[in-house]
Image (cartoon, rainbow, N blue to C red):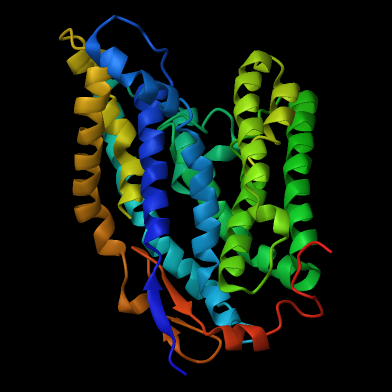
Length: 379
């Protein structure tokens, strides 16, 4: 039986949009809109309003990540009852794909900071760099944003990859409904542990920067790819526009509410739990380095909006393209990354884009959705 291949260009587009949203947020949206009466400010007012929500691109990244990581398993699930995933091969593939570009970007930031600031090799500096090297800097409130303010999300990604096999275990043993409940419970448990550590020992363990807080978001991406293949059937309300609009409006409302309770850490973190139910990687890794140079243009008297939109945004994209060509592309697909599927065939890693097997409906109809289940997640 022949199986066609179709590129998920929409996933690539979403990933790029998410990365660009983060760039615009850091350059425009995170700053107050200063009205100077110039034509640039007037034209950019809508952009300023939209860019203020650009940080949501981070959470879109997590959904896309869960979707793409679970893609290989879901594709094999359409032709196998119990597909198997090799943990070692999986980690070798993810390590080679993500860690070398991250390490290069980290080295660049350390060198730049060494030349632009008074570098002191203190015990904390060694601790900070060590946590970044092993991607655990998001578990310490002092190091989560220290070297580069966006690297905390990359640590979360690596930790979510580590939890993927635990997610598979729960999904196969308990089904998706109970698995999602466990992922949601992990958010609450981590909050309780963080508050307890702060009160008992004075240790600041981040909540919003923890992998446990984003496990549910990541799992929803994995669930989405199974729904795309027809392996599971989502409840009817998931496709209702009214539900989507209500969820979006609720999220927007919470974004305005959270700053009002910033001083109350417990209340703020508790409310936050309810807010977040290829080239883009290079852009995400390097954009802060480029944006640090924006002051060179604003001190010339140019409008901040003009600098952000006309100069800095294209500059971040151009620099990211160079970084991609020399520091990321060499670590993309490689024959050594071919992994063995449960059927004995090999599937080469597809990091720059993702291919989906278009399986005939007759095969999906003959294939049970989940062992002992009717195809509905919520019954």
